[in-house]
Image (cartoon, rainbow, N blue to C red):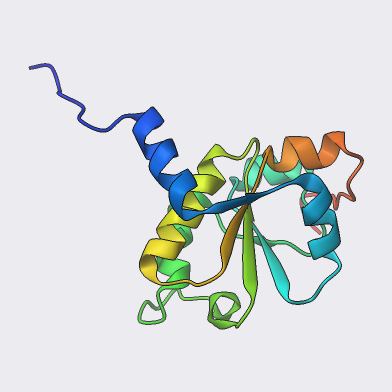
Length: 135
């Protein structure tokens, strides 16, 4: 039986962009030095190990997002209980857009998405933190 997909990537992306503000790299660099903002890296551990990350970002693989946000869940992380502005990013900005929308749908206030993701950050000579395995 062929599946009848009723909502594709194009529609999901359009809906997410109506909910989540996307910020430029220039804005992100300004926000990065402001403690009112928390950067949330939703890439997988292998991506972060291989390519690095934005310094002091909180790593939250996309598959764990809902568990880490929900204060009723044993996996909840207090980073999401802070009264901060959360800037989500991934490799190129699409997974993080969906993650930010899901976070907003769950009730997390003040979520934004980094347009172009980590690739755009790196291309703009943004600071990068490299964590080597075993450190």
